[in-house]
Amino acid sequence: MKRFITVLAILTCLLPLGAQPSGQYYSLSLQAFPYFAIPHFKDEIPMRTAGGAEISAEILGYRFNTIEGSLAIRYRAITPSIPHGFYQARGFDSFGADLRFAYSFNDTLSLFATAGTEINFYRRIKEAFASFSTSVGVEFTLVETAGSRLSLGVPLTIHLRKEITAIQSGVSVRYQLFPKRREN
Image 1 (tube, rainbow, N blue to C red):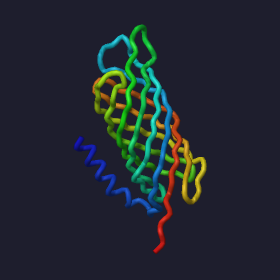
Image 2 (image 1 turned 45 degrees about the vertical axis):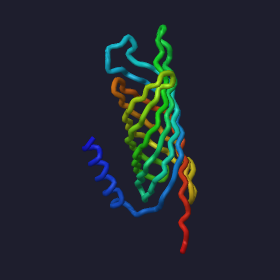
Image 3 (image 1 turned 120 degrees about the horizontal axis):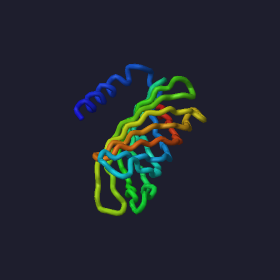
Image 4 (image 1 turned 60 degrees about the vertical axis):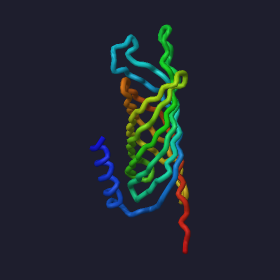
C-alpha cells in the first residue's frame, strides 16, 4: 500500500509538468459488462459468471493538452451468478473511489488507466468486504465541442477481492463537461 501511495504522489506532482493546462472538467460514465469471478480456493465452479453495470462521476478532473487526471466516485452493481446446479453466487453492490489518468494520442483516441478501492455489500446477507480495482482501456471520442465531449470506451478491469479475482470488460459511454471560466 505504501508503494501505491508513493507512486500516486509522484504521478500527481509530475502530471502538470508534461503539458499546458486546458481546464477543469466533470464527467459522468456508464458501463455495462460481463463479470467473471475466479475463486482463489478449490471449488467445483472454476469461474462464476455474472453481469454488471457501473456509474462513475469524476468530480475533480483536470485536462491538459494530451493528458488528464481525475478523482471519481463510483457505484457498481453485480448480478447473482448464473446458477450451477443448486448453487448461485450472491450479487453485490459496490461503492468506491478511483484515480484516473489518460493520455490522448490524437483528437479521437485515448488510452486510460484507473486505480481505486471500494466497499462492497452483498444483497441477501448482511456482510461487507473491501476490494481493489484497476483498469486500462481505450477511449474513442465521438463528439467534441468547446464545452463538452462524448466518448466511447472499452475498459478491461481486474477486481481483486480476498477470495476471488474477477475480470470485467465491457463498453462505457463517458460525457465530459468543461465549465466556462469567469472573466474578471
